[in-house]
Length: 425
Image (tube, rainbow, N blue to C red; front, side):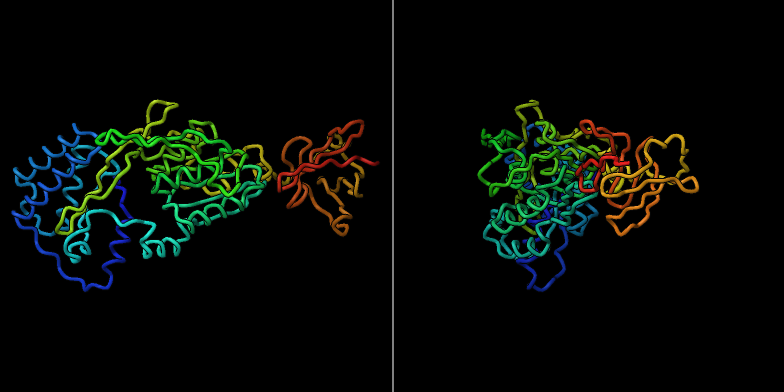
C-alpha cells in the first residue's frame, strides 16, 4: 500500500540540515528500539484520530517487539520501514507514516512543532522553484481550458498569485479540465482557495473534525479571496488511483455540490489530515489527527475514494480525455473525420456558392471547397456524418441548416464559436 510522504516537511528538514556533514546513523540497539516504540505508542494514543484504532496499533507493534520481529534489524532506515509496514497491517491508513530522517538525528533535539510554512523562507523558495506544483495551463481544441498541478501548497501571497493567474488564463474557455491525476494533496486551506473560484457565493464544502479536541473546523469557500475571479463554465476533474488527500477533498466536494464532473479512476481513499510528531533519535511519525466530514453526504471518502462519473484510464492522453469527456465536441468530431468518397446525388443540394464566395463542388468522388477568403485555396472535405464535414484545420461545416428564411450551412470553429453562411446560388 502506498504511504503518502510528508514531502514538504521533509524538504524543510533537508534544507535546514544541508550544510551539516553526513555521518553514519547509530545502530538500533534493543534498548533504543524499545524507547522508540514506547514513544511512538504514546504519540499514537495521544494524537491518532480514533482511539480504538490507536490502541490496536499500540498493542500490535509492542507485540511484534515482544516476539522478536525487530531483533535482527540494526539499520534505522530498515527499522522505520518495518514499523511503518506493521502500522499499516494493524490499521490501514494512507496518511500514517513512520520515517527515519538522518537530518533530524544530526540536528540534535528535534523541534516540537513543524516549521511555520509562511515564515520558512527556504521552503517558500523551494515551492517557487517548483512553480507551486503547477505544470500546465493550456487551451485545448474547442476552447477547453486545461490546468494541471500536483499538490495543494500552503496559501502564501506568491502561491495565491500563481494559482489566480493560472485560473485567470482559462476564464474565457467553454469548459475547464483540472488534472489531479498526479496530485498527492497538501493544504486544506489551498483546497478552499481553489474551490472559491467556482462559487460566487459563500458555500459549505468539507469540514475537518479533531475528535481529541472536540473541535470542528467548518469548511467554507471565500468569495473575497479570488481577486474578483469567478469561473462559471462546466468543470471536469481528472483523477487516478494516485489522487489522494487534499486532491480528493477538492474532487469530492466539487462532485457532491454538482459543480464538477469527475473523470478518471477511483481515487486512493485517504482523507485524514496528518501532522508530524517528532520522536527523537531521528524518527518522525506522520499521525492522522482528524477526519473530514461533508454535511451533504454525512460521510467522507476515507477507504472508499472518490468514484468518477466518467471512467478513464490514468494514462489517457489529452486527446483521449478530450474525446471522451466531449464526445460531440469539435475536437472529437475532428478525430472522427475520414477521407471518404461522396455520392453526388446525396449531396447535390449542398453544392453551390455560399456567402464569402465559398464554392463547393464534386471532383473525382471527393467534395471540395474553393475559398476566396483564403486566397482561393482549395480544400478537400473529410466526412464526419451525413451532411457534416471537416473543412480545414479550423472549421467544420454542417449543410442543410436554416436561419430564419435563409438556407445554408453552419460553421463550427475550433474555438467553440458557431456562425452561419447563407447559400447564394
